[in-house]
Length: 394
Image (tube, rainbow, N blue to C red; front, side, top):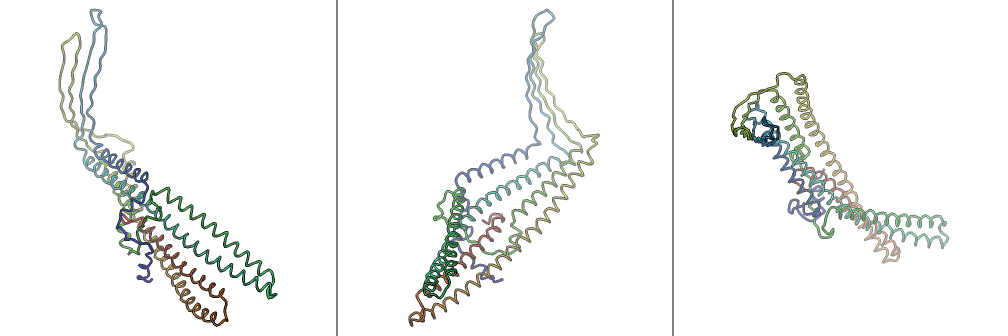
């Protein structure tokens, strides 16, 4: 594969990372993403401090029949705390689990944002491609019209059967119908773009993508980073589960106030330390084994994803390589049309060729030039798929 040619596939103006591509998204989409990120941070903080227990306050009042037949009142107030401070490593692993979960959710939010940005750029590229295809189709229609004129003259001169003229007309009609379909598809791409972005299609400059090496792609793969965070979550969850069956040391404290209409007020404090652990749990072994299997599965899934991402990269390289070959073909054809045009113009000036011969070759040459640009956009779309899956690259 030609590395220089791969780099030359950059069709769009701009430099990757030179601008904040999140600005391509609509205000509503950005607001949703901001809310998601705030929610992730708050939920992650909740999970990080989930081991810190509540300080509970309780107040009660009741009426009862007293010894003298009167209605007596009893009020009580208590403030209690029962806080584990050592769980045989369980607290540490709970905090580590919360950190791994936070990283996983942050990566998920980034992946979601990059998929949205990818959709905007993909729709933009889709419109550019349809613009080129529409131009190309218009050149084909021009040639089809020239063919009708020629066949009409030959038919009227008796050199051709009417079926040839009929076929030429049908070809032009089919090309014109296909042009309408392209315009419809382009409009659909425009609507997709408008649903994702507030920007004017003509005003934005999406980034340019160039081929990257495999190591950079693998090392920055959002999918692999997510799988790694998921594997860490599984590891810490396994260790948390084991710690649940080991001794837990807790500090408990309380303040109690009793006010009874028949007795004096009673206030007292209570402070102590307790040790607890499950003595019998019929599911203990199976629960730990389940967590161990989940952890082992996460490690296998990480390795499987590494293989899958490597194959995705290789598939993209192959697609670019094949597009390069198509570009070579149409580039050479355009050069061929250049030489044919020179000789045809000379023959036209000598009266041996018609103006239709010249126009036909000019139109065909333009289709080759447009084909090259279309293949370059196809290459950008292939590269876009890679960049959208890389952390912080799109």
